Image 1: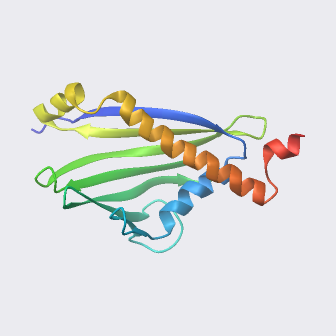
Image 2: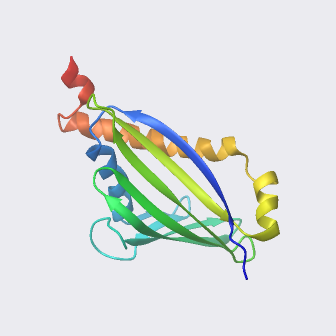
Length: 175
């Protein structure tokens, strides 16, 4: 009987000066539209049409060390404007075709003053003995959380910029 994988979590949060729907729409919108960056060898392609919802799937590809790897993502929960949760199956050609599973959960929680606490939790399922080795000797917690904070900072910047352009800026409305 296969053993249950070891699940390792990473989490970061940021305050956004907008109502929850604005950062939710930033995250959802980034998943809905195809992206191709030939200069960085990255793509993101929705595999189904329509808005982000339960069952929405997309594929992310990246080339590193001359190997093309891809990640298949599926939305498992989408409730506007409070949560987006998705699972990941990453097929890494650099690691001789090993598959990494995991996911992430975005939460958009109103602070009660018109602002939003955005939380991003990421997890990876570490398999077998190699999983234990990864947990103790793999990427450090700080580097994974730094990556999450960068994504949150982009979401904050883009949400506040959009809100300002649309006249929904919480900070501007207060003054």
